[in-house]
Length: 355
Figure 1: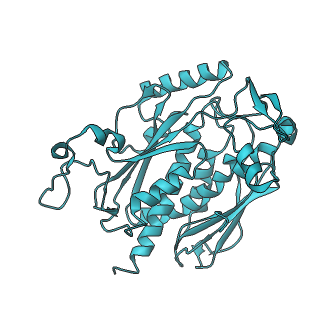
Figure 2: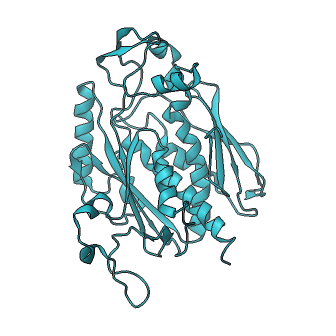
Figure 3: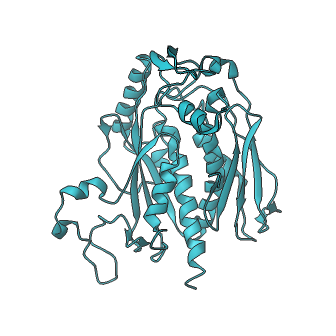
């Protein structure tokens, strides 16, 4: 197993490296005869692409997707959807200094230990550039879910110590009205200022993303090993730079008593609180799904750091090239895409056990 395929029924197999000719993928298990709006796919890619503001990497990529198969006359055919995205603005020379030396906290060392041969240009396969493939698959999954009245609200709720204390559903227009993608303008301004201050210091900073999904029907999840929140956790932790995942009350539940944490029922089957985050026993209960994803600071910093080379010799390395001071704003559509893929996959799986 190579680890390049995600999902059981609705699946994505991706390929490509950061500085190769192109990245791309094959999406399989897509139900036939469903209308696909290709402009919505490109819109999601535009939300993720580099160079979209002064807060992110200035690598200039149009991230234009070319759909190769599986869609005819605007509808899915049921066959695999193949696609590619050309890499247009590689600057491989920026990475000559890491050809033999390892960047601290990057995948350079671990890839070298596993494979013995690595594409050092932009991190190769370990680069976050690969996540554009996930956004394509997620954009298609979202269109299916929208037809089922399942809606996503995904936004930045923390950068460094600046946090937006809210777990509500927000309209996309409120989230997208600023480059940080925080629905609260005052907090977004503070977050942007912190990112810019961090960049001036040649440093990076982390943050977190909140995702709230409304309309998820009760009954999705396949215990015991394929619990819905377990697969959501795997999906999120597979994203570059993610170091934490919590659903519902998450780690805050440690300090709660059961009498406070229990979600009491209303007569219609809904619950008065949602500490469970919409999932109980690994199965959705009809309440909104709510989870957070924590991102570490970007590993490449524009400072000199001690490291070692492939021979184990001590040396120094300095960050070069075009990098994000904070990856979190660009990661919003990636988190949403992975969540959409999981929900659609479980929806299709549920059709095999419950009509």
